[in-house]
Image (cartoon, rainbow, N blue to C red; front, side, top):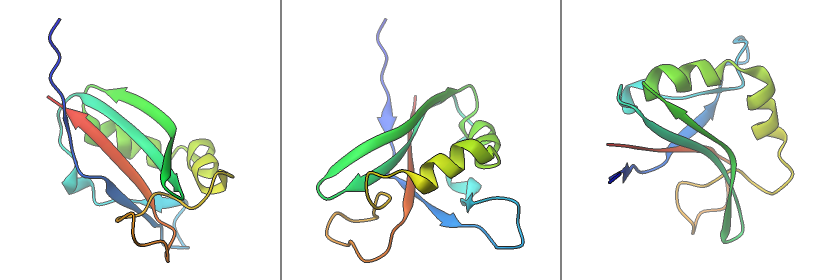
Length: 104
C-alpha cells in the first residue's frame, strides 16, 4: 500500500474561556474534514514528545470531540515533560499546546 500523507503546520491550542467546561480550544476552521492522523505534542527544550496520537475519518469532527474529553485534555495540560509545543523553536516565552495533523 502506498500511503502519501501531507503534514500540516501545527495549530495552537488556546486556553479556553474560564466560563467554558473546556480546557483548550482551537480554530476548527483550520482543520480539514478529511481522514487523517493527528498528534497532540509538547515541546521540551529542543525535543518534542507526542502525548496522544489518533486517527480519524474526519479530522475536524474527531478533534472537536477530543477537545471536550476532559481526561485527555487534563493529561496534556499536566504533562510533566516541559512546556507545550511552541509556535517557533526559538520562542520559549509562552507555553502553548499544539496539534499537528496529516491527511491525504
